[in-house]
Each structure stands twice: as structure tokens, then as C-alpha cells.
Image 1 (cartoon, one colour):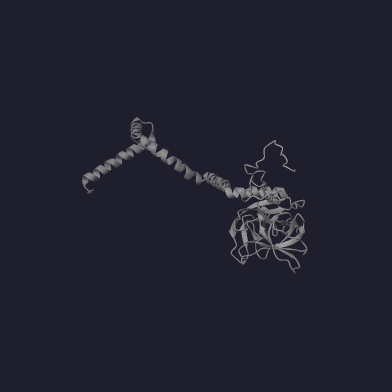
Image 2 (cartoon, rainbow, N blue to C red):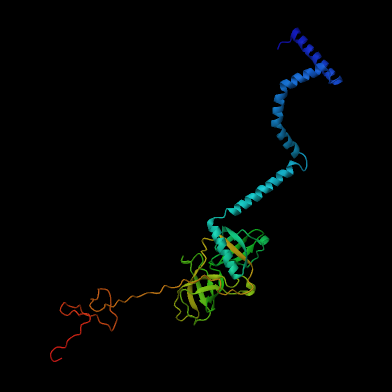
Length: 342
């Protein structure tokens, strides 16, 4: 815009008009000319103003409230806390079918044995020489060192180290693990040692019994024997079943290989025994042994007039009769007549 005389004149008129309107509005806000101008401007710009207020109002209230102490800030913190709690509950509800089955078996075993346990989940596996796992339960849950760890199948190991939220468990399959056991139903005492990582890969524990005259048989079951003050092992926890008996000639103790009930390479939900049972459950927690199916031998004895079939053996003392011929076939109800001189 060029600075000309006409331009300066127009600008001055506009400034004077603005000053007059401001002065009149200040002196008497109800004067009709001014009110008319306000009404016209409200009619023209009122719709746009209301739309802008509807959009910007909530935003302005949110930021205005958050700047005030005790306003939306507390509400936001409460909402965040609620979201975290709902996420935790959702995580608990998303247990896989395998975890749910393991938890159910754990509760059944602990209930039968009278063990009070804290349920935990394996969250890490040790990478050192020893076979260890880390659980998501610690001293804040009542866990202490030298406590028994089991799952729904039997003995898992013992707690060796505890922090506030986690603990470390030495597995019973480790080579340094020694577990006192009892044989069912005789109650003979012995101990089992883990195969360790350098084993043959069979995963079998080695059993030694104090009494060298003890007769060991495959299929015999083992449970944990009582420890001093029930640490590190509470009594009556299933350990395994004898798989094979080694040569005991010249040995001072009876030796056997034991297949553990627990699969140490597939651990999920486990339980840490924080309160031992009041009474020794002995062998009441052991799984039922499968009954051997008796072998059935069928012996078929051919009757009179029937030839012995191939593959069927007649009973001793009852020789098979020869096949009758048409001339010598017996007649039912007929009495044989003696021949001459008979």
C-alpha cells in the first residue's frame, strides 16, 4: 500500500470512529447504537464462536485443571494405576492350558501332603555349571533359603538364594544334589544323586541304599526322607521310580538307577514349601502304580471225533482221539455188541 494523502485520511477516520465507539460503550453500555452494533456482530459471528468454544472448551478445561493442584493430575494418576491393575489381572487370566494343568496338579499334591506352598513360575534358567532356575517369588512372599521346591509330579529341588522378588533353585538333577529318600513300602533309607550335565543323557538318578542286603526291584517308588527341621527337604515328596538295578556283587551298598517323576527340562508352575506338613505323609502322595496285566493262556482240548487243529496243544493226560471213519463212527445211544468169543 502506497503512503498517499487519501490513505492517511482514511486511516484517521477509522481511528476516530473506533475511539468514539469505545468511549460510548464505556459510558453507557446500553445505548442503542452500540447495542445494535453488538447484536449485529453477535448474529454474524455467534455461530462460529459457539463452534470454536465447543471444540476448545474441554481442552482448555483439561490443561487448566492439570495446572491446579489436586485437579486432573490426581485423576490421571488414578487412571494409570487402574490400567496397571487391569493389565496385571489380564496377565493372570491368560494362563496357558499347560500352566493351568500344572497349577491344578500342584494344588492336588500339596493338599494331599499337607504342604503350604507359594506358587511361582520359572522365569530364567541358569547358564553356569550347576543346573539352576530362577523363580518369580522371593522374600516378600515368605520364601527363605533351603526350602523344598516341587511341582504337581514331585521333587524339583531346593532354594539356594533369595532376593526380594526372586529366588534361585538348585535342581535335583544337578550332580551336586544329594536327596535322602525312602523306598516304598519297605521304608528302607538311601539317597539319590542327580546325573548332572555331563551325564549319559538318560536323565536317570543314581540310588544308593544303606543296607547292602536290601533287595531292589524295578518299579519300586521313592519319596523324600525327613531332613533336620524339614530343610532342605520336607518328607513324603515323590522322587521317582527304580528303572534298573545294577550289579551288587561285592558292593557295600545296593545300587540302582531311578527315573525321576519330574521333567526338569519342561518346568513351568512350581511350588515352594514355606510351611512343612504337621505329620509325615510317608507314601500317601505317591502316584498309583500301574497294575501289570496278567498273561492269559488258552488251551484248547479237542473233543471226541474232532481232529486236533494245528497250533493247538491238547491238555496233558487227554490224548486226542483219532478221526472216526464212516465204518467206526459211534452211534448215539447204541450199545456195542461183543463179537464171537467176547
